[in-house]
Length: 336
Ligand code: KG4
Ligand code: ZN
Image (cartoon, rainbow, N blue to C red; front, side):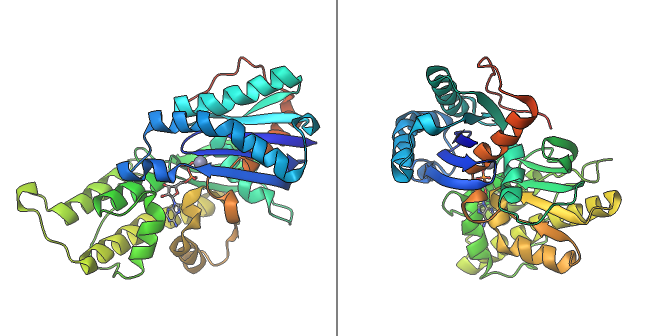
């Protein structure tokens, strides 16, 4: 079954063709980083306008590159949330329109679920369920029990900022470009992580929940001083030390909670998803602190927002539940 996937939850317009949930025929992403860079974060109105401009030419370019026609597609899948409402509407309505015009079935896909599926998609060996899923992206931070594809149970989540958002905001405070994650990781290599004793928040009675808003304020005070009238002059070494300390503390918090969740639930496998999984310091920490854990990471283009994961998971959604109604709404948040 050839599935067309469409993704437009945030600042990437993407389309992909995937066969039977696994085999990627084409995976096209048009990033909007250039558009949002000067604002230090995503501007929703600009994001939707760019999606409108890009989506049809991107589809045309993809079909031409693989010498296939849209008539060859058996199913159309699109992210229906969570994400920015205006951005979501573009990809979702494009998918619904194609479904209606071509008389092909349509399914809506949960973008966060798809981030977890991205790692499973490229994994060759059989996965032993139940296992832990860790979504570490710009918009989401969650730990879930994965019982099977499509059956999840939320066991921990952020109560404020997502981990990627914390990287992006820290980068902005340090005057680094957007997206902040890669910039912080690079700068942190020059720094000493023991210089700034930042702390992540503790969520009362929820040992697997995260809170990153406090650490962001900690970084702000380290950069500007608690009294903004006496702004500190920071050397480039100070900035590198702040980046290294932030990264060390925030990622250690995540690794500790992954370890705790696996101990509590007796899981021996973790499936990772989302853009923050590109961070090599995170991979080193996992290897060092949880050496016996089996880890499944998204590879290459599958870690950041992409439509291959949407087409791939769309195949399973359709196998399980059949097609969705075209009345399916875009949703800014979808509970697990
Ligand atoms: O999964 P994703 O493409 O988008 C969402 O669904 O949110 O993730 C983007 C996030 C951004 O916040 C970006 O700063 C972060 O992933 N990111 C990283 C790294 N590469 C991307 N964070 C830390 N280290 C990285 N190397
Ligand atoms: Zn995403």
